[in-house]
Length: 323
Image (tube, rainbow, N blue to C red; front, side, top):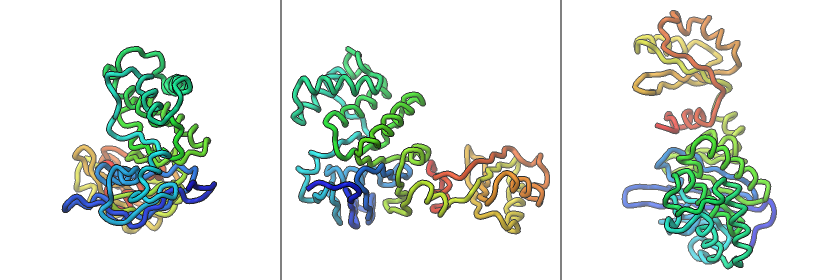
């Protein structure tokens, strides 16, 4: 059974995975449409990889079920694995093979004829900037190994692609290369499930995002919808030379009507205030004019930025994505 355009290609129903006392995934229900890039965004340990391993039939759920392309992960494993590609968080390559041999080996496992496999492997490796390497892949850098892993997951042109932290450990240039390739895949009607803790990655690539924390989905929507609903227009980050000054500012915030939310956090052992407020730069001036900060010498650092998915996570959980 295959999915038609705009239909639901993945659906989870109260999916759970418990490891003794740890509830790694705790009642996840989601619907993912054909052809969309759907991100699962959350900090390390939130349950992203466990969820992916169940959807790719590597792990059996403790309770609940999910369908992938119309087949249950409990009873339809053989049909599911024919249609999915997986780029796992842990790099999985054959280190005693060369780059093209790794890709061609996966092609052979999927029954792709040898000459066709060689042609496709060459093109993929060129796209990822690792064509022509004749040394064994065990000598590759971490970033090159991750790009090779990506190419291996795509050689048989899967209908559904699972990407678990695909840019982890990559330098900025390689990271952008992978992002551009993912954007190109989106135009080819491949359904992509991206597991990431990188809010910029999720914001720039995703059609929709599900935010996961402690095994539970706490919000779902487009990046814009999430920022509009759970974030605020702008954020002012302020750190202080003395913690007593922070307490004074916290008291002053209570009386400013356009302040939507505020939270206290830490960065490099320095306490900070994150003040979410409506309006633009004019309201920053108003914040200062209304006595938010009575003496500018009290401020160690001040930074203004637009609302982000990290602010959404912070407002929903009280913690940063990276905490």
